[in-house]
Length: 143
Image (tube, rainbow, N blue to C red):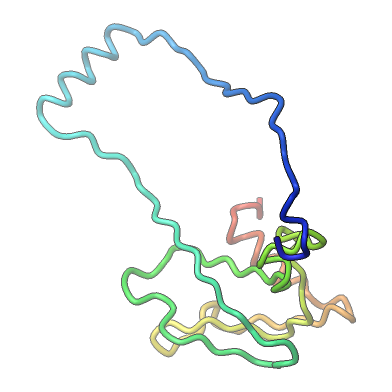
């Protein structure tokens, strides 16, 4: 593709699916049936959206306005990856998210920063604990 290896062939030699089989207690099945007579089933649904933005090489700042035009998300995850990896270069790993010399990041909602104080980091001086902890809290790994 990106580097002239369009003739590459992959062969899947084995594929498996693992499922769990359970035997439902008849009393539970009856309770579910009675509940469904009175109301409909409601399932939680989390909408996930991915947005891609490019920051030209050498540019020291980027501002993206109006990221979310409808409902505000519960969580925002920011990942920085090399453009060549994102575009499919076989020599690059698209899952290697680097710091790319990021020193300041702020997200504003209705003119207010979230978090209240923007994240600042200096990876050369190992000053990134607050950013790291904020990331851990965001994905639920802070306990």
